[in-house]
Amino acid sequence: MIRKKEFAGIVFLVVICLLLITFCEKDSPSIGNRPISFQAIEIEQSVPEDHISIEEIINAQRAKLLRELQDYNLPNKISLSNLTLDTGGQPIRTVIITTWRSGSTFLGDILNALPGNYYHYEPLLDFGIIQIRGPPYSEPALNVLKSLLNCDYTDLHRYLEFGMSHIYLFTHNQRLWAQCEAYPDYCWEPEFLNNFCKLFPFQSMKTVRLRLKLAEQLLEDEILGVKVILLVRDPRGTLQSRKHRDWCPGEPDCDQPNYLCSDMVSDYSAAIRLSKLYPTRFRAIRYEDLSLNPYKHVQALFDFMGLQVHPAVKEFLDSHTTINVGGVSSTYRDSKIAPFHWRNDLSYSEVRAIEGNCSEAMKLWGYVRTDGSSLKDFYPLTPYDIK
Ligand SMILES: *[C@@H]1O[C@H](CO)[C@@H](O)[C@H](O)[C@H]1NC(C)=O
Ligand SMILES: *[C@@H]1O[C@H](CO)[C@@H](O)[C@H](O)[C@H]1NC(C)=O
Image 1: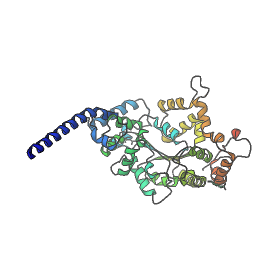
Image 2: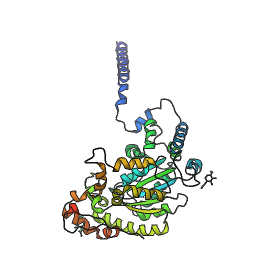
Image 3: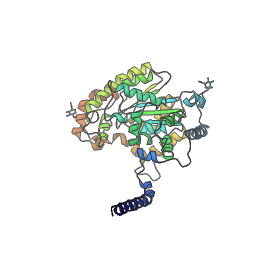
Image 4: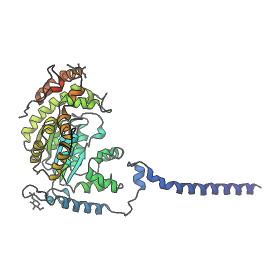
């Protein structure tokens, strides 16, 4: 009797197992319905169908870049191989130093419109909503920036781990992201990233967390040869724009005008120092000037980088700053008005609280204080000088 019971038990278990296997098989096609995010599990499970190797992807990208840049005139006596780490050259590297909501998406995208550009977007995202003004964060932050500018992802564990769950770290770098979508297995692998990054002759970076005086440590490195652009914006525009971000309110470095404006004052001193020490490798630009006169300022920025304005960059400006067909509410109008939107959105008392904390910063960077007349017609700009 006991044996019969045991036998029945075993049969029962086998039936359950068979049922489970059947169910699992039926379920498996629906795995493809998971959200398109790069979770660790997904990366482990997906195997590239054609088993393409890193080397093959790199070779294809190298050929693509040669094709894309064959008609682009590089500076005198410089060939593409002088500009890629892949071939023992040094890329033209540009670092935008700014703070949150100061127009850096616009400027970053202008530079990234250049074919052959590799965009290190917000490499200090994982530091949180803080400004880095010195120790203890300055050293780890600068190490990350230097590693990236050298296309060395080998020790960037924290950066890569953060990126896997915050993919916008990479999505803005669309030339890289295209490969991540095609070959998710390789996307966060230093072995792939190091080699891929080294193919690109132009490397741009923007960071909203590092204050300018620390960027001197990047400029000191003659081999890197970075060009640094400080992007400045009217604190009234910056703070108005930040009000509408859910990650900002309650973070002192983000929502307090006195922090923003004392950073603008110290950035101004650093700007004077750097323009003396590195007259050919440092520039400051105001977001308002760039928006009012994008073609002129983009030409000047490309002169500064030693490059011609590529037709793709002109196209980007055309489509982001000029009148659309039939455009009453065109982006052209928007690009001239966007920097001044704060005049419609801030109350007079908000404006006064900002101006009260920011008089020094505003005077240095050429922003006019309101005088009690209508905000809507108020013109906030005067010239500034960092010589
Ligand atoms: C560019 O590279 C070539 C060959 O690698 C080298 O001979 C030449 O000196 C380099 N030119 C510059 C300006 O670095
Ligand atoms: C500075 O800003 C704070 C709000 O963050 C405000 O309470 C204070 O009145 C401002 N200071 C001046 C001098 O306006």
